[in-house]
Amino acid sequence: MAGDTAARTGAPSSDHTHGVPIGEAIRVWARVAALSFGGPAGQIAVMHRIVVEEKRWIGESRFLHALNYCMLLPGPEAQQLAVYIGWLMHRTLGGLIAGLLFILPGFLSILALSYVYVVFGDASVVEGLFFGLKAAVLAIVVQAVFRIGSRALVKPAMIAIAGAAFIAIFAFKVPFPLIVAAAAFIGYLGSKSGMRLFRVTAGHAATRGAVLQDRDSLLGEATPAHARPDLRWSLKISAVILCLWLGPVALIWVVAGGENVFTHIGVFFSKMAVVTFGGAYAALAYVAQEAVQHYGWLQPGEMLDGLGMAETTPGPLIMVLQFVGFLAAYRDPGGLSPMVAATFGAILTTWVTFVPCFLWIFLGAPFIEKLRGNAALSGAMSAITAAVVGVILNLAVWLAVHTLFRAVTVLSAGPLHIEVPVPSTLILPSAFLAAAAAFALFKLKRSVPMTLGLSAFAGIGWILLAGGG
Image (tube, rainbow, N blue to C red; front, top):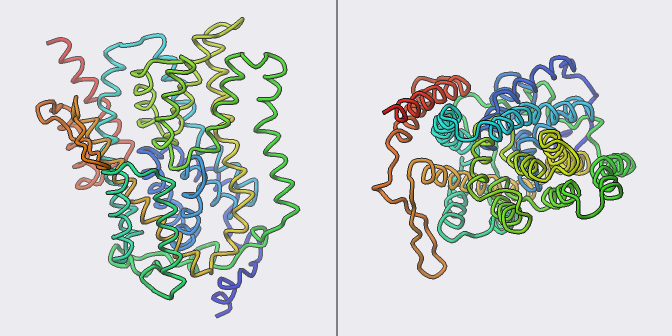
């Protein structure tokens, strides 16, 4: 009873009673980062499996509450969710560790692939690597849709919201922020009116196996003392992060001038960090337009190559921006060697893209934790999660169309715009690899790294065989 009261009122619990040492947290977050393939859906699913199901650090409801908040923020929601949970468990240090480790494998992987890209170009082995990995990523995203959907779509109202969100973005190209706002409004009104259709509790997922209640997790269901809102601390941490974020950009501007490529990179991607609602795909159209047409940093096809790197390496899909910054500096190195300039461009892009993520969490999370017992807010956030499931389903369809077919047509009728693949352009090897990867994941229960590795090997083998033929 006392725990229930604390959860409703936001009363603090005693700090560090969960018994998880910081060393174990480092190992766990490194493992989460290494396995975070398949975009945000796959990354969130991996995090849920390890942090909730395996380690039992936090309960189902708390995980979804944090996820709902991160869905509202600009930037990569999966990385921000890691920061949020790390902060809940081990204060600011825990959030920094979780967030930095989450992006490190992806940063190193894409940096290495960028080197390979500019040195070897269209080498058959590299082409085969991406060919195989893209097919596997499709299966991974589909699996993640099922995993997240089974947790969030536990009531008819949530299924309806997810379906409406999918139709809105797939058929009518409704902007992601508008979908989120509409879902939040519907969920808020539904919960405010007392309709339990808009209240999602972990118990409704019992058909998928035992669900961890907040009270049974290591953290418990009460609010940790450090997670209480503290305006003084919020202002202090915000000032520090703002300096870390914009200080280097201002310094480059002063030293190199406003027309330097590094100044352009710092300013442009700092702006992107503020407006990238909806994840990488929501921002890619704007980034591609500016990077290709305005700045001339890369060609349209190269943008897709960078996306392929981000799709097939661990970490957030928004890491594709690192590849854009890499090529921008590589082709305009100034007085530096191209490789040194490109490396600095990749680091700068990553820095100004991800530092703001820590600001959004450290500033807002304490206030979101206080509102955990707010029924109307919970309803709004649950509706947002349901809508995002529909958006992720759209991502899976988009990936399928563009991975399995060489050409698509657009059917238009008024506001309706639907991409339809041309059946005669089906890429049979891709379809076969995707089906095999899906069989390995769903039926054989193989791990994501094993599935990716086998698909990459198969893709290289096919390209070499086809080239030799």
